[in-house]
Length: 252
Ligand code: ADP
Ligand code: MG
Ligand code: MG
Image (cartoon, rainbow, N blue to C red; front, side):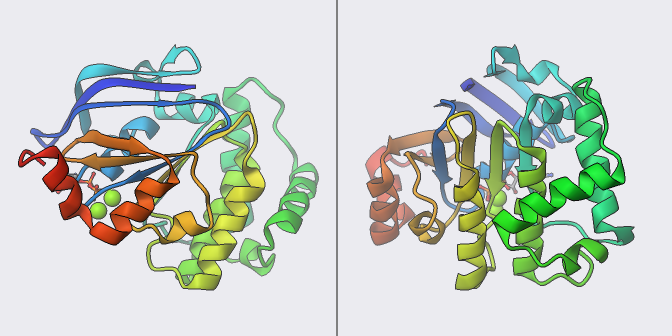
């Protein structure tokens, strides 16, 4: 589904990704772990097509298409979803309205019929039942006054509505208490399917107790320096990132 080959990318003239390669098949959950500043969020942002990143070499193929040729909206329409590390608040903009706008923008870009508010509400009800989101949150401003956990649940809810092919979660666990963490993980687990892949970016192993990854990668100094199974996350947790630095040499 996703093939990243020798990706080099810069931010503000500084090279951040330095030859990153990664392959993800449909149905798989890949965790990307790594020290702060390694380039994890940069990778997520580049996949989503955010501004401010310059790809200087390498390629990204998604579902047989050259992802780097697509505009951010086209990527979303093609099924790429990025959940923010820090969800934005949009006071005064009704959350349901916002979700429907995002939902219909995606359908429109796919050449599909938009849903009216009744049809959309029916869809929302179905997803609410699966995710146990309080429907009170739908009537407030986007993330307005939401707790950290509520913001993350709202994002997972948005993801459930959009039904992406590739969902990228960037430190969706940061700052969550254990109940919110479990709720986020339940939401993700409920959406695992043979057609869908997840890239779960996380600094800590904790989230991976609840979202069992198929593959774990370590991103350090702009490259994937180790790939393994779930046990790799446990080894990292036990030994810390210095352990990786010692194994791969001083350049990390
Ligand atoms: P991670 O998510 O692994 O902690 P990031 O991808 O956020 O790492 O950042 C990687 C490096 O890129 C860091 O050194 C960071 O300071 C730098 N960086 C990221 N975004 C910007 C930006 N907009 N301007 C300048 N430097 C940036
Ligand atoms: Mg960071
Ligand atoms: Mg980050």
